[in-house]
Image 1 (cartoon, helix red, strand yellow):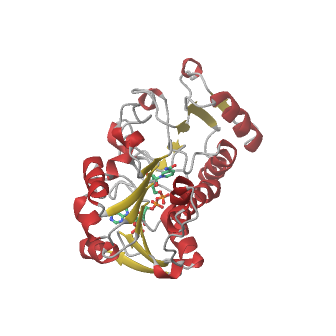
Image 2 (cartoon, protein in one colour):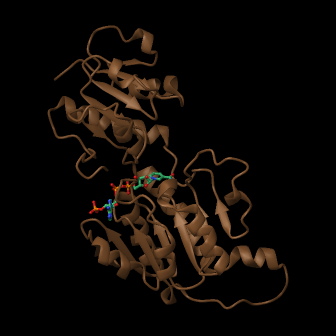
Image 3 (tube, protein in one colour):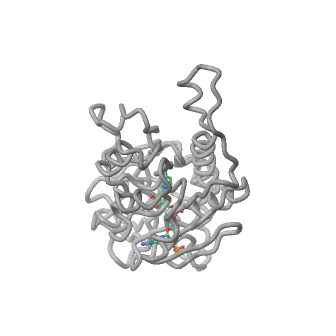
Length: 309
Ligand SMILES: NC(=O)c1ccc[n+]([C@@H]2O[C@H](COP(=O)([O-])OP(=O)(O)OC[C@H]3O[C@@H](n4cnc5c(N)ncnc54)[C@H](OP(=O)(O)O)[C@@H]3O)[C@@H](O)[C@H]2O)c1
């Protein structure tokens, strides 16, 4: 055993419930939920959502930051996590299932005109297409994008994936790099964004990308709000170049009541629910990583500071 297991939970969610779950997973572990009770003995593990400034730095002997989120841009941008302190992001099969469910629901609902029939409420048939006649491009071929692309391909959509390194996904055509982005999105009926937010991906869902898509297509964003240039999206919806959008994430969350995205008839807004952290399975995943650390094995799902995700 490397260290006595002491874990500090810096989450505004349900730290007491999480502590109970950690103690069940790691009998003998000391799990602290109140910063005032940390003391001076080393606390190798901190569990964080969006911690208040100064919290990470105030924990003595920290060895690993365990994120309750899959996306960690807020931690990297905060400057609160020293460069040599490893961050493990959350990779949880329950989260992947949640994301796949949400994206499939949104894409299939648009593909089969379900919202339009509800609005029509008359016996008028719209032009219907088969999945094999539509092209869907998934930006990001990682844990979430890879699974989503695999499922969309299995449904029957002509599926493309775009990633930094050209990661292959079963049933999909893989693209990478700036030229690959152009190829992957040209003529796409649907673009689904599942990229992490980094300086290279910020503002990626903007006018040039919308202009390359097939007219009247669907834009789906479940990555981060800052991936979308909202004004460009509203403009492309206004011109008909884009037919509809489904947005789960926003530059400001909660999305302010006055934001025009709420009232836009062609935009579906969901309140960052595509793949919420499932505390039960998330804690099992984190406990597994703590056990790895204790055994001296490499940690899973470490953030690569060079690439920023
Ligand atoms: N809405 C929600 O509820 C929710 C929930 C969870 C996560 N998310 C978001 O989903 C994001 C993705 O999560 P994940 O677990 O799938 O991440 P991941 O496994 O790290 O996958 C990221 C993918 O993006 C690609 N990528 C990164 N930077 C790129 C760039 N500059 N150009 C092209 N491709 C790039 C990576 O390429 P490589 O394959 O080459 O590495 C990889 O395929 C998270 O960062 C978070 O923002 C949202």
